[in-house]
Image (cartoon, rainbow, N blue to C red; front, side):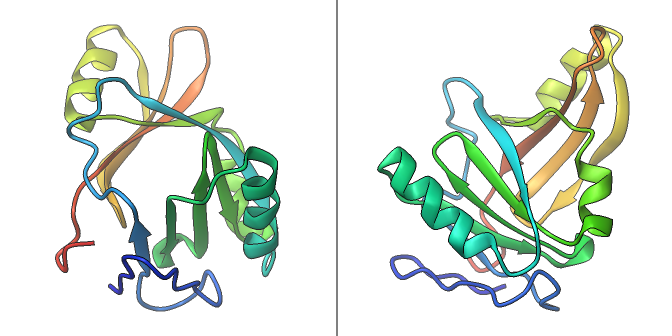
Length: 155
């Protein structure tokens, strides 16, 4: 994995064979409360322009940019928005999820949701930034829960 601490290294395509991970903070274990992300889906080659739009709209800079080669995606976070670039085909399985919560511990939330009878749609698994899972709440809402941890190279 590659990492850039100050200068952003923008992946050229979501299908890059090795993951590119850049984050201002690489460990969510100290979060006092979850960080909610509204998902914005965008087509191939548009992530940079969409990211620039949201940076201008919110008057803030992205704090995360990474590729997810196994899913052929590239993602960026700006404020409360998670921008997800891919083809219609690769985005299809992600569109049914209402949002993403960045949490301190995915295992803790998995245990809570299981105890409350939530349906686990995608079990806990590794993602480029740590680990995550997807659950359907009792009210039908589908949420991805993700924890961030440092990568092997410290990103």
